[in-house]
Length: 292
Image (cartoon, rainbow, N blue to C red; front, side, top):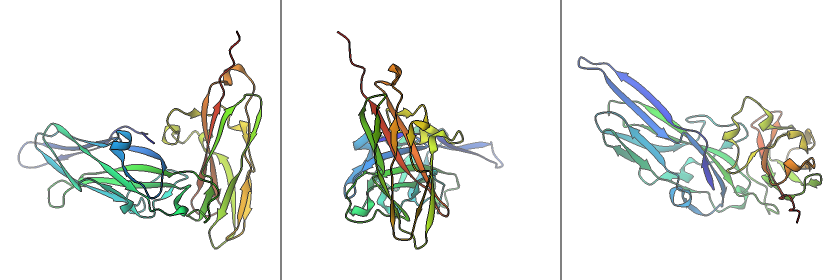
């Protein structure tokens, strides 16, 4: 359901006084992670579901107390391209809002999550910022921001339009048991939920050398070797309140090396104005038949 995408968030500050120099440091791990296939209406204890929790380290000689809080990225932090902001940061909460960490020790913070039980919240890609910072008046103003990418379950045949100015149905295309050398087709409906017409450019995000692929890839998948194996319309025009269909087609060369693989690509959908969205494409090729 989830995997860590980055290592340790670290912030260190040297505090000057009339006495000896004191190093106050805050380290939190992981610095970010993805939560996949979140079912609206279900309450998640992220640690019980996945074994993942925030580890807060205190390398100082005295104990420290830190405050924990969720935020929308526009209020605090930043977020990855293709994701939107979580509509309400309070859909995420910690078991405890503050945590004390003994000297030369570490402590754990447990995150919980519940997306409201509404059909429009399927097929969503959001980011929430988890803030870890010093208590007001505590003498330390350090803070780090942990980015959590939340992807709700992909579904088709929704009875309502997906949430957001750009809605997707489904949000993930799965090509399974693909025979290299064959052709496979899929379809994705794009919804323009804005009050103005938009032109949408579609491109392979993982082909962009400026992005960190590990930030986007699902566990056990690697980036598709050639983004040109997936073809689709490069531009789509949609009137306000209307929808259009994107028809990706997969053609994997029939080389023996392409059997038994799990690949992924991200189709970035960038409107002429506003935030981009994306469709996750997962490909699993069949194993090579054994010759007896």
